[in-house]
Length: 360
Ligand code: HEC
Ligand code: HEC
Image 1 (tube, helix red, strand yellow):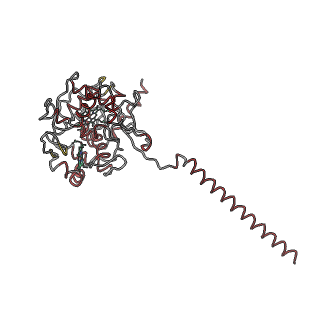
Image 2: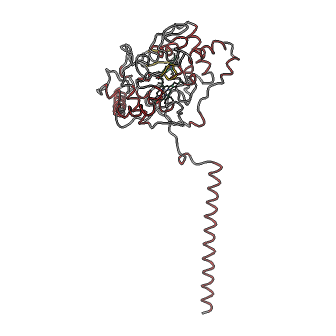
Image 3: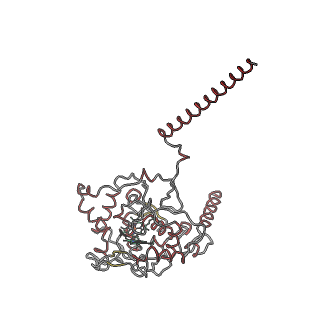
């Protein structure tokens, strides 16, 4: 009897010791993991990933971007004075910021544009992350562009914006103004390697919606979030100086024409996502993606100047999915190419190019 009791006690003692051992091992594993995570960081797959997709000259190219670490930053403007052609670069910068003063309807140099400034769309003189900045221009031009079907240099690209976004005339390539604009763009991109497009260049690339963008919903967004600055009729608001806008127009005779980049819904929506209402940033957007697509549909359904586009996209298969003018290499309507849904068109394009490459 006594023996049995003793044995029982021993058993229990052993049980407690084993449990304690387990507990210690568990604790050690826990502490070990804790230290590991703190020192080595979370394994990649467990990290919350921020997916920001950005423009890469082609449609629908998407990449994961670590926006915190690798964003392009413009060189310091105060450094310009150290350059041999400092005066030229500064004049170029001024032309980007105050285009209208020099080249608008009342411009001091010529009257070749609609009163907008380059900076209205290329924010902070073309330096803002995802604000349509110029970081990847000097490094990637000259390049082939489908819209013209030709190699384009910086002059051609700048004049594209004069003729479309500023609904105006091309600048003389050899003139002082164009040379200055180019000098500024080259200076901005001086830290960027040949062929590279830095993170934060161009615009945010929004995911396509499953539905078509909705004009009426877009009107509600416009009225509540945009109208206070851009006006009841999208006409914007002039500064008192009669040269420039405090708030640039979004449609009507003084706005960009239907050949401009912003006339494509994806460009407009991407611009708005990271930049509008004024003060929005790529890491502090103020609208949902859907609101951006819908307000893009609303604004781009209003009346605006027209451009002769008959020479654009000589190879129709090269048209971006959201180019709103046919003919197309597919059978989707102009309406669907303008407002979406775009996914079906993208899928069709993919299938088509696969079956083509099989044939080749
Ligand atoms: C109404 C808006 C708007 C205005 C004003 C405007 N642009 Fe643009 N610009 C765009 C858009 C949109 C793109 C194409 C962005 C994209 O597809 O990612 C673009 C592209 C460019 C590019 C090529 C950028 C690249 O990375 O490939 C250059 C260079 C450029 N613009 C220069 C100018 C200059 C210079 C002016 C003033 C004379 C100007 N733009 C005025 C909207 C505008
Ligand atoms: C607080 C005033 C304000 C509000 C609200 C605002 N914007 Fe703007 N917007 C501006 C200013 C100012 C610029 C020009 C920025 C610059 O030159 O630095 C601009 C530029 C633009 C441009 C490019 C230039 C052009 O005129 O084509 C677009 C497109 C645009 N805004 C769309 C919108 C949309 C869409 C909304 C509503 C979701 C909106 N904005 C709300 C002030 C505003």
